[in-house]
Image 1 (cartoon, rainbow, N blue to C red):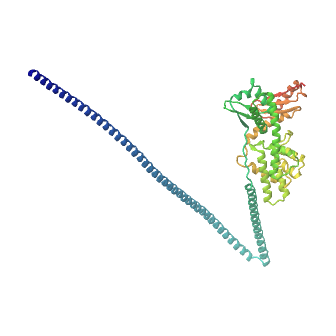
Image 2: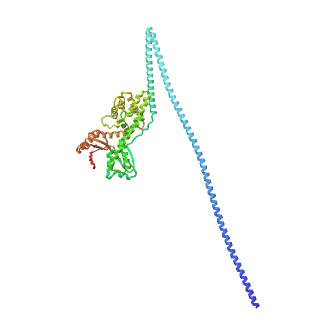
Image 3: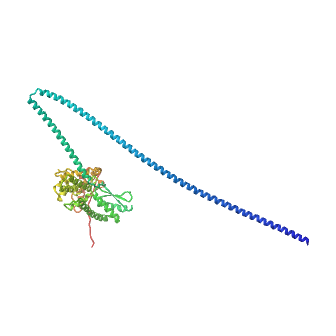
Length: 522
């Protein structure tokens, strides 16, 4: 019993020791875990603090960079501003130096001129001294001769010398007066012309021989050309204008020396492109419609021109001719602009010279119509001045205006003051820098001569010089000319061109005889 109790007590003591041991081990493990967690938390906190410090450092560095850049920009602007001020001061100083150099040069030039004048004066004084010495010697000789003369002979000699001296003085005075009046007349004429020109401000633009038409797309070029080129051939035949289609995107070019013909063709092509239906029949219909509209517009231009100049026409036909002048070019100068300019200059000169209102109106009318012969359809012999004079005479204008038109290029004798004024005003307008180009005018005159030669034959309806004059298309009246006669006319036209026209290269004469038969179904 005692032994059992002792054993039990021993076991209980061992068990208690084990329990205490286990509890101690558990406590140690728990303490390790807690210390590990504390260590991990401390490491996390350390990392967070380091990241936060790094982020704040980056922000501080970025702000420092931005502030340094701003400071640098501000400093750069101040430096650039200082540099600009320095440059401005240098430029100002340079201008002052240049001005001083110019002043020095002017003074030097002035001194040189004065030196030359002094040299000339000195030479004149020497010559005068020489003449005085000669006169003194001559008078001494004359006195010696007079001493040997009678009183009557000495008196006659004195009178003769005085008469010669008076004649010389009179001639010198007359010459001086003439020179002064001539100089005053020249200055007066210059002042009148300058005043007249200064009171006129007209825009004059050089014209060219081509016009361009914008297309909505390049596919339209194929429709304009048509199957096997029938549309473009029909267009060129009807309008008498070259239609140039190349690789330029969205653009076709119309070429003709005749601005009226080219403008009608341009408007017709624009309407065809807008309409979209492009074939020979539509081309002809739209061309006729555009031509009629153009004729109405031309009439309106002529009427507006007369109203702006304050003139009244003698015939309503004048509106059509004056309106066509807007689309006519001479020496690359628009004829209507040149004619208005001539009319204004001539009328201003007449006003400056104090002429009456009737003369002023006459010169203004003659100035406006002096080149009207250039738009005449008359192919008869004579220059445009003669043709224009015939038109003015037909419209019922007075001899003064008719002669002013006919004489402005010296083809007839100017008979009235209006004629002289128109010649002067026309020369002033034509002499403006850039107003005239001889090469273009000669080129246009050659092409016009080709058409005139063809139109000089009978039964010719119309003639177009195209392809820069390398081809002449002639249309005959099919009711009056047979096929055989057409061949003969073509040969005669070619022969006459060969005889009368000096043209480089070859000229192709194409004579077109077209017969149309129309039947209407009712």
